[in-house]
Amino acid sequence: MDDLTQEVAQPLKGEVITTYISYQEYKQELDQELGKAAEGFVRIGYLLKVARDTNILTDSPYDNVTDFAKEEYDLDKSQVSRFIRINDRFAKDGYSEQLDDRYRSFGYAKLSIMLTLPDEINEVLTPEFSKAEIQAVKEEVEEERKVSDIERMIEPKDQSIEQFDGIGKIIAQLGKDEPELYRAIHGIAKDENWTVEDFREAMAPSGDKIYNVRIPGVGRQMLSIKDSEDQVQVINMRTNEKSAYKWGDIEESWIELMNPEVSPEESYEQTYGEPFPKKPEVAPVQPEKKKKESKVVKAKPEKTRKKPESEDQSESVEQMTLHEVEESIPAPAPIEEKPDVQQADPEMEETPEEQIPGQYTIYEKPEVLPHAPVMNPPIDGENPQKDRMPRHVYEEKKEEYLKACKEHIQVAQERIDNKYWRMAMTRLEEAINCLKQLSDLEQAFEAEESEEADEAE
Image 1 (cartoon, rainbow, N blue to C red):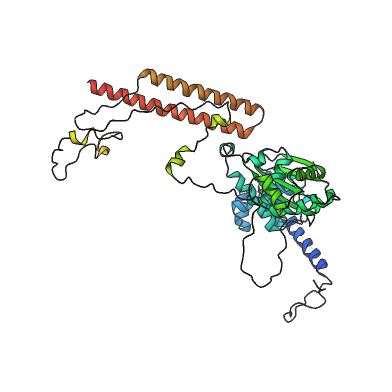
Image 2: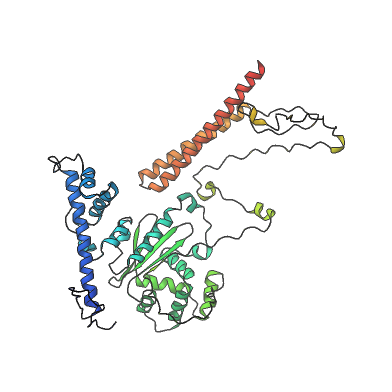
């Protein structure tokens, strides 16, 4: 950008517009002011915490900090909470008038977004990331939170990715999601004189970069590259566990995906078992100014599976159970198949009795019966008779549900002892589901026994 040696707009009468020698000087001053603004919000949060935690309001007409802030400054409860949380997260030692040095250059807008992110992710962000880029990171975190642990466990695995381990699996998924990056890395691997710095330059040309990938059955992984660090940070966005890898590990993982003897398209197909994605053709347009490349790459959405072409194909798709995913989860009880009712021969059917207009049977209006079950009309010539559950079958099912419930609770306790909170929650949900099924079973059996008693009378 040219030096700003002239006024960029005509000032109003009596006003003076400050001129700047360069864009760098202008931006530096704006950054300082934004830093002051963030410092001000931290101090506001601190003062509100003083009103909350001390007796400073004793001589005032207010009972608490919420009433005080509302009446004096028109701050509602949510705004008060937000100022306090900003101080909790970003002030020195979590209770100070001063902004922590790590967050001094971010500004209020960015810190407001970072307020919702885990500390492990905030630690890899720098002031060089724009508000839009930090917002993109937040969206990735929120998307992963939408996937439950059970949904993640039963996700179909990608065998082209499963053959790798550790950082190799993450790089393999990245190469599949970003074919143009794969092409660039392939060009480097083909050169016998490549260096590790070549890989670094290809992945993060501007110095800092965040790649997000989602591995089926594992979840989102964030790969953070910083120009100031010699290692690559990887964060599991489900557990917030952080790992560090040397650039030599990254280079080796890329090389394992490549076949430098063939074209990048052929190498890609050999690695992933599918053709190299083609860029969509677009109509020629007037050349536009190239947009600045984002420092944050979001995970690619999973491809929608094709639906079976026929019902027969749909029925042939085998559904996985939780027992197949984790053997410690009891297998579900087999569903009892009821024998098919033989339909009467149409030639043997008698002519139905003529109905009086407006007349209906209880089979057409089962809702008029108390606690009416869904009923099927009897076959002509047969007496309808409800199949009741034998007591020994009821006792067996009851015992199965109790056993499964106890096993889930026992495993949940083990997960809690080992601090595997999410896995413990999953097991407790399974235990609750067993108890609900047991309750439904008991109610149904007691209702049948009550009906039998009424019929006997």
